[in-house]
Image (cartoon, rainbow, N blue to C red; front, side, top):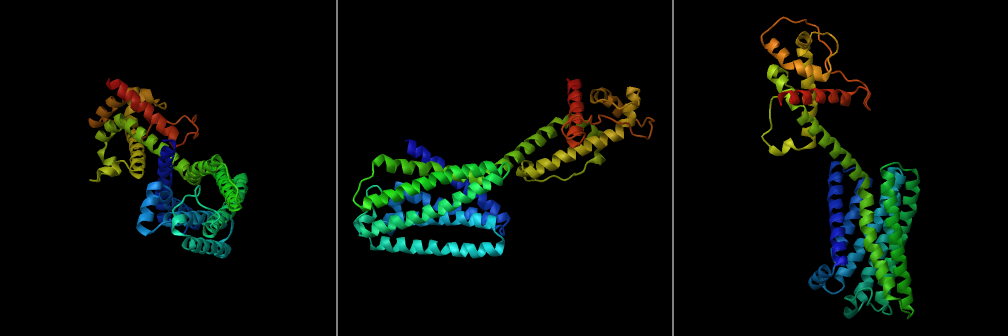
Length: 382
């Protein structure tokens, strides 16, 4: 049951991250680092179903014994290769990176060719065996696991060294993701090295305790979702910050409704946008929420500027009006404006930012004053 739950969690994290990085890659096809991350996750995602018993049986039934095992290991080789490509592109200029990536392709292709040939030369009865039950004294089986394990250990070790170097220089939130990658890669290197040693011991006729093999597999199963999380962590943090801003803007938009309703009824010509989209989902998109937020703030402030002379007369003061005081006299001022009563032409400060907020009198401070006035106006209605 535990392994089933772990597999489901791994699949959700892996394929969700693959979709997210694929979407980002479509936005910027020229980003080679992003492309390497996507290909790395794609290879990992393709290898996953071949490692599940049901997927392995289906693959073997369609193409022959050992096909799932070969496909899984080829995908894992690609995962290690494209992970190295990411660091190569991150550490080198485009021209140098292209040359280095081509050099790294040589051992990848050579290893893939050798393990494919080894699988083809392995007797059919041995192809369907798992690593735990495979006979390492069979030459094809030994070559298959030794070559695949050697390349993975090499590629993962190189990636681990580069990750540690970057983690020392990176800032948040990138450093958090790199630390996850460091832990994940360390687990992968450990699991790969243990399997490589176990293969050699079994080739020489020795026996490896079963808990060691299970522990190495468990370390790999835990490292893969941690690795995927580390890759997408900076993007997740950025997305979470965007969601918080989206939620805040939506809440402010609704909070300003009482004030905006009064001012819009008096000054409908001040509306910045009078057309509406017929598509209901546009209302929930981040761009639409931000646009409506800024529009409502600007319209509220413009309306207050226009009504401020009447507000000053209603409050019988020319001093800057506090939000609560302005709310108390707003309706009287609006009635006076509607009746075209005489008022000074000069605007009076209303609900000005106090400059005590983190923005030091910026937009957020201005919005807070408008929210205060809108809440006071709503309270007066009650």
